[in-house]
Amino acid sequence: MTRAMPRIDADRLWARLMALAEIGATPAGGVNRQALSAGEIEAWRLLIGWAEAAGMQASTDPAGNLFLVLPGRDRGLPPLMMGSHIDTQPTGGKFDGAFGVLAALEAAESLDATPERDVVVVAWMNEEGSRFAPGMMGSEAFAGVRALEEVLAARDAAGTTVAEALATLQAAFPHLPCRPLGFPIGFYLEPHIEQGPLLEQRGTPIGIVTGIQGKKTYEIAVEGAEGHAGTLDMADRRDALAAFARMANAMFREVGAADPAVKFTIGMARVEPNAPSVVPSRVTFRIDLRHPENAALDAFGTRLEALAEAHAPPCTVQVKVLVDAPSNEFDPDLRARIAAGAEALGHPAMPILSAAGHDARHMAPLCPSAMIFIPCRGGVSHAEHEWAEPAHVAAGAAVLAEVAASLVLEEETAA
Image 1 (cartoon, rainbow, N blue to C red):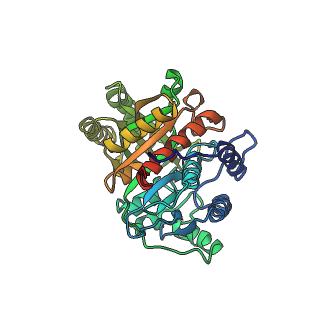
Image 2 (image 1 turned 180 degrees about the vertical axis):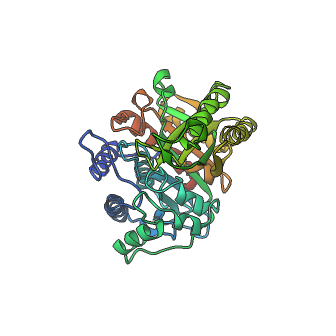
Image 3 (image 1 turned 45 degrees about the vertical axis):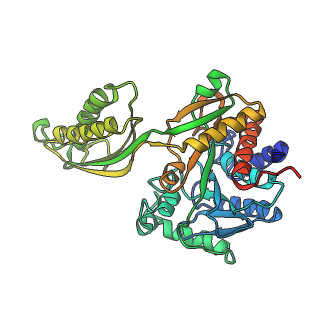
């Protein structure tokens, strides 16, 4: 006979989501729990307590990732890893990231037999990139995409380095084992809210993620010269803000409007000295560029760099690439298992491309990887009114648990 399907505790999962959301809760109903903050330390205590009560073992690594391990029969086999992140945007919601970690914990707890290999629930460090930039630092360091030294040197707006914030977190857990950075993984699964409207519009509770569209992030610094707003002739100015305006106009026109599939955003701009009667001497801005096709992404990226150079004079410009992540495709076998699990549980499912980036991007080159999406109301995420229905939360966790069981529990045989 076949293996019995695991049974998740939907009420427990929802209660845990709401309890975690209290840490960093904002007056408007959202969550501000940024990476390596006091709130994340408190959240770690909560997660570790739940996991240890379920017989799991907690550990961390030099990049500040949290691992909760359900031991398997053969600990030499590369584990099944499941999870996401628990850091948020400054005005984030209750579900982005947190659903993935807690659904993974629930799936691990639902296994009714000792798994053949370890099951690891992971909470990656700094997925959001809201306090420290860029995001996905923990998974990038784990996967060898970014050097640990570069991660540790990053600073937040107050000047605190990742290394300093990480030391504070580590001091709060002096007895927590620290494992080496990076280890072999057998499979990786990441559940997440969609952060888009398609599943809700289609009335479909489960999204089988085909892949993640590519992303490039640029930091561009325009250097001009300060001058008195009342005395310096317009023709003699090296106005960094004026150069930025020319660049931005051309970029929106020639890249942002060039292809319906392109996503082009200037999400941050800093003007110096930012005084009303001083010609700006420096503008630093960041670009988020995304496209599902790698050739188009590269071409648009090249065009952005050319436009920056063309519209800078009489100022100068420096272009720095912070993130260069090509599109990826998730494992076909795992996607088939997700589809089969959803069908067995009676949940409609559909294939869907992820428009947002996730830590799973960096796991896909390491091992068979996949993602499960559930709907979020109005497609809203990174906002305090972000919301997922309890029934969808339960459906996503149940499908995850079934896929996990299919990977780590042996099929029963007839006597």
